[in-house]
Length: 443
Ligand SMILES: O=C(O)c1cnc2c(S(=O)(=O)O)cccc2c1O
Image 1 (spheres, rainbow, N blue to C red):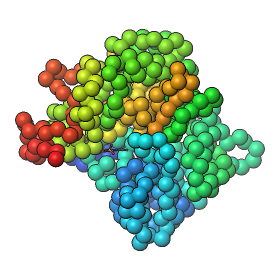
Image 2 (image 1 turned 60 degrees about the horizontal axis):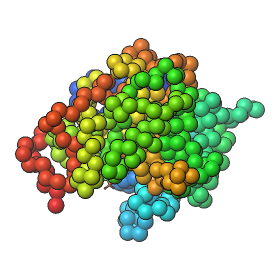
Image 3 (image 1 turned 30 degrees about the horizontal axis):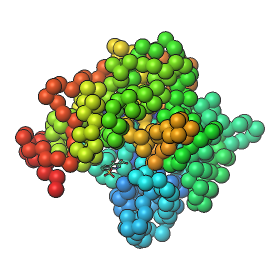
Image 4 (image 1 turned 180 degrees about the vertical axis):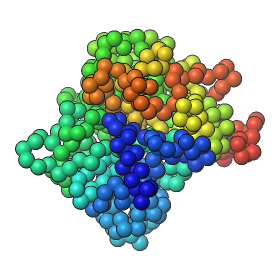
């Protein structure tokens, strides 16, 4: 029908970047057209005859997920990869007991406070494999009125003949290394399958994190050191360009900005050979209280922005870096962000030196922190994202307008007003009512 063709047409029109935002209910529908997708579209029959799939995520509503697949695909083997233990693991497995096509893979989390944040779909069709890397939990609310990022790969065909099956970005090898790091028998068949497919059309790089204390040659395979390695390929002409980080949660970053944020982490993101970049060139986008209050969801949007008062009060220096969530260009200023993106933009916001969309928030747990005088990179969580480098698209920079490059929010970002405060989810917000006339009183 027209619905299904529009999906394939939509994907073709989104080439070569194939980056989308999730549809949002309640915004002008002209903004839910071309570069917007919904999970039911991604899983629809128009994208191919599904044989089996794997869903990597954090929050998973099994019943809701099953009904996102078309009826005809609801018996195809589905592997759910998560990080839950104990009671939460039991609850998840009992939710799925009535479905005999669903299996589970519990990711090891051996370092405290780590989570399985990664959000990825591996879709095996009769004629190939598709990879989807995104930022949305597998629950209704994450696909309803928020701004989320979704990268949808080309259909990677079965490898025929003598081609390597690898692309210049080494995406297939990096994906195999990522899946291998789980060291789980249930992922072995997916790894073998990926090895038999031709990923040579893949134009993005993989930037992922796996828990561990990574040293030697593994040190720059993950987290911000992987990003640092990849960004050495960036045009040096962009060295004065600001770095923009945008995320939906913030970890404990240290008492001073020089402890991690503006030293180790910023050095990675500003890499192009030399390191140093002025603090003024770091712009962080995180929703203000009013962004949440005036969002489509109202204060409940803040339930997905878990920045705690305990952490916030230790790092008030962060406030000077903060910018509001504003996405008039995509009609999504009121669609609260759960997407996470990092980029280097020209001062006028018209061009990008690189762009990344990932599950990783602004935290040491996600990006890693150097220990033992830089001998090891300690990462607590699983994260996964994609990096767009201009050279992979035969460009020097991304010209946002001319290249029709989808940027999730307005550039340059707008600094907080003096009266703006970062959203904090575990304190009351009662001065002004939200879009639904409600207040926020966490217990
Ligand atoms: O998308 C995720 O992976 C993710 C992870 N954690 C969350 C938490 S919490 O577990 O940190 O309390 C609270 C609210 C939303 C969350 C979320 O959206």
